[in-house]
Image (cartoon, rainbow, N blue to C red; front, top):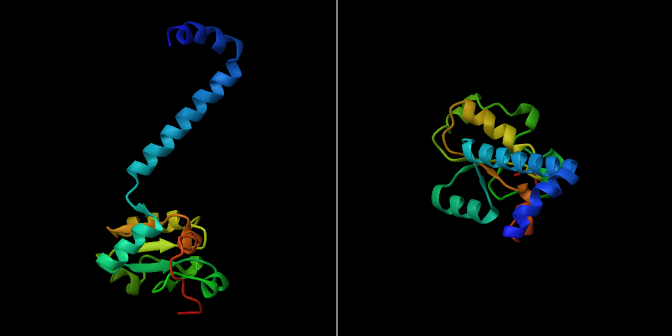
Length: 147
């Protein structure tokens, strides 16, 4: 270890670009992790969602495209087109105290929808990490069709 510390300054001076890239990556990783810790919604694994469903009967909102929803969705999920997703809608506003899980096919659009729910006053907001594809890959049951 002592030998490593003596050679480190020489390595950094000889490979400045690599050293700066390493520091930049470490900073980016730290910032990302801090942002995950500070956000007001939680990301669930398929197993975590199963526990939440069994324990609290959450409202499941699937923002997938209609064709993707009809091919495969988590049983009990309600389809809402992303363009029509409105946390202030009167039907959705009734569920402010319920746990709400937002998902889509791959889990890419869930974060922005979760943030909108938080801004609208929802207190128990979750996303499904990896989306419905992660649910299927965990070999959990999927539903097909419009309901």
